[in-house]
Amino acid sequence: MAKAKRKNSKKKFVIIGAGVVLIAVIIALVAFSGNKENIISVQTEKVQERTITQVVSATGKINPVEKVVITPEVSGEIVELPVEEGDIVKKGQLLIRIKPETYIAQRNRAKASLVSAKATLKIREATLTQLKAEYERIKGLYEKNLVSDSQLETAKANFLTSEGSLEAQKASVLQANETVKEAEEELAKTAIYSPLNGTVTALNVELGERILGSGFSQGTNLMTVSDLSVMEAIVEVDENDVVLVSVGDTSRIEIDAFGERKFLGKVSHIGNSAQTTGLGTQDEVVNFEVKIRLLELDGEIRPGMSCDADVETDTRVNVMAVPIQSVTARLPKDDNNDNMNGEVEGNKEQDENAEMNENGNHESKKTIEVVFVVEDGKAVMKPVKIGISDDTYIEITEGVDADIDVISGPYRAISKELQDGVKVSMQSGNKFGFKKKGSN
Image (tube, rainbow, N blue to C red):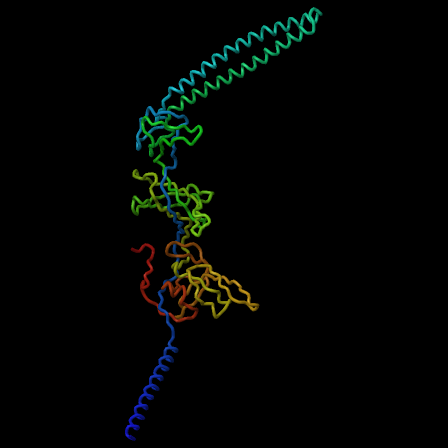
């Protein structure tokens, strides 16, 4: 019995001892890890002078600078259609003839009415001459007291009435003459001629088809004639970017049908009116139409082709530049030493961070653009002022000098993990996978 008790006591002592050792090991590990200094692996790149070209990208369609949609001004049946879609036409060439018989008859009736009105005018003139002479004769006799007052008044009234009829007939002749002109013009509109040298890029009717004129409606869309020798890209630019674009800016245009081939162009027009889609919804987008004249052409370019345009809005030579991912946002050092390196997501974003003042109210504090440079193995936060940027680099106008090692990666470290004064280890080469401009 006593021997069994001694065995149980010994077993308990072993278990307790093992527990004490385990706790000691855990405490040692925690203490060791707590004393271990946090070192962040980063990639760096030296600040250098570079040439930066700021680019605004947009998408759109290729269209001729000059094109005319042909619609008829008179109605009728198409009796001549000497062109087909794709035909090259000259200015003044017949495109369509509408059956003219009805309009010939209208012109002939108008001419007959004009002849009748002129004949009536001659009668009115003769009558006026006769009544005028009669009035002069009665007036002379009246002065000699040979006729009564009533006779003089009657002769005068007849003369004035005839004079008024003559003026009315002159107006009728003028009206008939204008009716003839109108009928002749309507007849002339039955033949439609090309308004420019170009190509028939759309043909929407056939021979024998009856078409409606645009007198009381929009009219039938007959065809489109376009000058394909001068083309332009019509693109939609976001409202935030359109202020950067100016007439005359150089643009490089990729047309989907031509692969990666680029066509040179210049901005020729910037729209003043916004084009809004998704109005009143979360997907609302406000764009402005920008026209880019193509300076290079290929005979295979067709109206309506899709394109992407890169408008070069500004170029600056030999400016201090850092990789675009190197610039991030932080609270200023003077605002709060505990939070000056707080996590602020978004490269170059101007977020506002709220904190409580002495009265318990929220105050907004704006973040600033910063970069982290490496000094004596530590990350040092440097406030900077930025300028323009391209796809890879951003201009630094103030804050860092040339040949300083600026941290360029990884993105998570720059945007969230780096703190002012934290130790860093630099990695050689492009470990974090940032593709440099021009690399394959």
